[in-house]
Length: 138
Image (tube, rainbow, N blue to C red; front, side, top):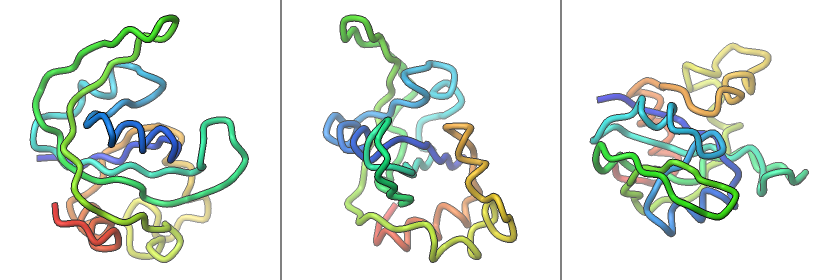
C-alpha cells in the first residue's frame, strides 16, 4: 500500500469529491496509473480555484483508491482521465501548522517545491498526520 498527495485547486477537489473520482495533472493518465486499489490519497489545494489568486494552502479531501480502473471522459474539447476514489468525511486542514511534522516539508525553506509535481508519494506517517489534522478516519 502506498500513499499519495495530489495538488489541485479546492474548486476542482469539490467536483472530484461530488463525483467520487480523482483527476490529476489536468486530466493526464500517467499519474493515475501510478496508484493502485487500496492506496491512500489526499488532496492539497494551494488555491481556491485554478487560475485564481486567492490562496488556500490546505488539505481539502482524503480517501482511498477504490479499484484499478482508469477511464477517460469526453467533455468536448477536454478529455481527462479519471479513477474512482472513496472519500471519507473530513474537514479541511491548513498546512502551516503541520510543516514541521511532515517529512516532505520539515526543515525545508522552499517546502512548496514538492507540490509542483502535481502528484507525489508520501509516507504512511505523513498520511496519518494529515488524516488526524483533517479529523478523518481512513
